Amino acid sequence: MEQIKAPTPIAIMLACYNGEQYLAEQLDSLLRQTCRQWTLYIHDDGSTDHTPQLIRSYAQQYLNVVVLDYAPQGGAMNNFLSMLQRIRADYYMFCDQDDVWLEDKVQISLDQMKLLEQQHAGLPLVVYSDLYVTDADLNIINPSFWQEICLYPEFVTNFNEVGASTAITGCAMLFNQQAKDSLPFPPVHATMHDAWISACVLRAGGHIQPIRQPLVYYRQHGGNCVGADNLNHITLSYRIRNFKQMQLKNWRLYRMLRALGYGSIVKFFAYKMRYKKLIKQKQAQQP
Image (cartoon, rainbow, N blue to C red):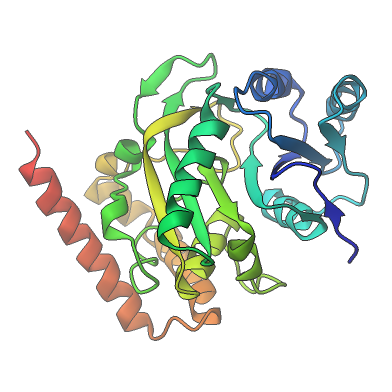
């Protein structure tokens, strides 16, 4: 597959599908970024609303906005990864169609990446931020997505631990070319593009560095492909009612990790139990 060389250090990839309601607000937030070292690549996945016309109007107005024209890919993960395969840059970011980025998101992410590269030159690297969880009108529901889903980055630092929590959100990530080079295509049994990339980077001996501040307004509107589930509110009755669905989710995650050479399912559940224990200990220490 012939690759497009981005004219800027950062390639931002926006996957869209029937996103006309919120897409312009997201695009405008990108255009307000304090860092200008990026090119935005957009691929529409076969929208039936006015999304195609909207993205073409932005591409006509702005030289750093490029619409990619090829067949629909059938879902957000395939759409994002199809762009990643076609584009080459120094750094990569994913962008959802319905969020809003803080104006310094790109600059802060790039600065953190540069610092991480000084410590781990030549390795696959990912930096990722926290997010504001908002309603459809961008009113903040929770000032920390990590708090909402009980994500503690300090407990997920290597490939053994990655099965405990794969909640490194794609729209909050920036990763380098070495991270992309660590990805085996096609993505066998991948559950989602961000979880797969995180697992591949850690498997390759790379590093994932959290940015402990929210840089995205993560809009929850009922039509999200992936939303924010508050794990603190999952009761025993919920677990009983949804036991089959939860175990299916675990199986799909384990199948992805097994395809990457993770090891036994006993190890998988042992690390999940360890993660839950560490969370309880951490929460007990908090005031």
